[in-house]
Length: 218
Ligand code: URA
Image 1 (spheres, rainbow, N blue to C red):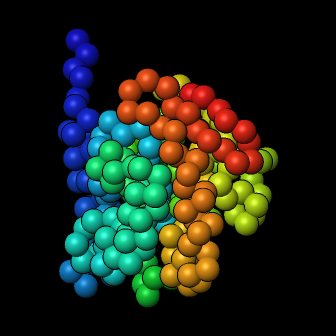
Image 2: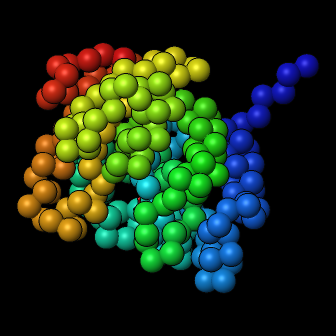
């Protein structure tokens, strides 16, 4: 007899696995600083799943993704496309804070990546929106889009069609919201890119308005 485990229970299991991830080079740093791991937050039935890089200090202190300055920008970007944060799921590839917000290492990405893979299988998003270069590379490689990888300066705002175990999925590439912290002049471009998600309907088909790839239906 097959027993269907609820999405909440499946996500809880990932949370437990994450809490006990002693093989991670970031585990000791988490414990020494009383930080939390950041599993992710949002609707487990979300059509859109945002994947960032790794938690920063605010995130590690609260256990919530994108709750600091980058989060404020993400909220602004979502609002510009008429999307509520509660409708989407927001997470990162690496789920513990790297020291001094350094870039995640390949080793760390390999350790935490499988947890993100499991989250994708639970949520089954129609659209995976990558935030920043690390998320773009990880997600595109995962969905066999390696040959289409290009620098984020060219890929941002584009949608790529891929096949997940549960059906069609679109990968949409965005700059990391921090790009607007380093250079405020980039904000209008980030806002323009986000409009690709504007056509997402809450019931039925997902229509993306891609400035580079034309309009595509899922
Ligand atoms: N930057 C990220 O990539 N993720 C967060 O959760 C916060 C900042």
